Length: 497
Image (cartoon, rainbow, N blue to C red; front, top):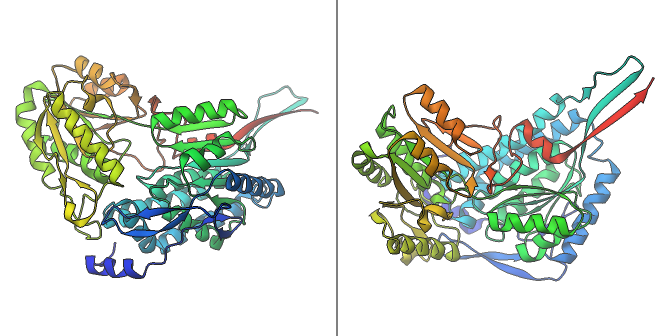
């Protein structure tokens, strides 16, 4: 927590040193081509800097460096207890620089400074420390063999990892990849989104300060169709991990098949159902949660509760409660600690959200809250939290991931219908169930095709719980010890005694 005011943050923003170069073998460097792209703040449209625009040549250099570093054993063969100490120090440095990193995050992608500081930075530091702390607690196996055989099952680091991360939680999503990849001894190349590259670039220097050897962690800012594609097609990248849209996730699988069959682990889109039964234990709490589930982080959340399924017998009572609750989520200047809804990441995303709102109107849904761009005079990209009632699950706004603060309210008559509607989507990332009936909660949770199901809350869990999706929401899991599966190979060694 901090006592800084909006004026304090604005003053800090004026003097903030912003690094915009790539990071290879422990040093900042320009792109090989010298090309850059503009980094504009969604807060007010200001130019934050010209960021290195990496491409194929940079990918070649970074992968070559990562491979040589991996093969040297300077990190990959370091004792787990020693790696643990360095990882914990890395997490501590993120925490020590939390205010600087939070300011970069807010200026770069528009989220409220209080969220950047108290949620994103705290969780990013915790992710690095948790994975570091865990690595010397993970044991290999001895197989059950005949008396003259010894069977060993060991985990080995997979090698060179390329991580392509999204713009909505830039540093936190990076750390969900960095934590287990580094802890298990790999070299990693981070490709932050061109929409929000600044914290990824900055944190690389903190890794060096913590003691992570040069070449273990490289950062290549740039575009997906240039440097992202180059990494995905590279014959010497062993694993590709990605968080982002389902469309790009599918293309990355194609690239892996066209190259070296690199392992590909994907966390993609979502259209998560938030199911409220008539016997919910606290309708007021459910309404408040439903509002937060779509308005938090401007709705730019893969697990956003974007489909609110309400039992018909309480809908006329419940929807006004959600409309009232959404009034507490109001767009404001992200540098104001009191703001809880910031700017959408850029003009392109804002216009995309506005197009979906128009589609809701055209499809016959009833707008009951929000629906407009606001604060246009600031030069920023703000859209007020929006609720459509009278939605059916076939509508565009109910089927497609909007990635903005747009909620679709859908009525159902019984549990069977609720489950059918909830599962009627290409996605399967998350879901929530509100009921006082224990059996109904368990039965519904089991029937939902989603990687995370929350009961009588929305967005529960911590670093100990795996995170990922069913269906076209991806494969593999972030967080928890299960994340180590993505960054290691299993080896069976059979010895004749």
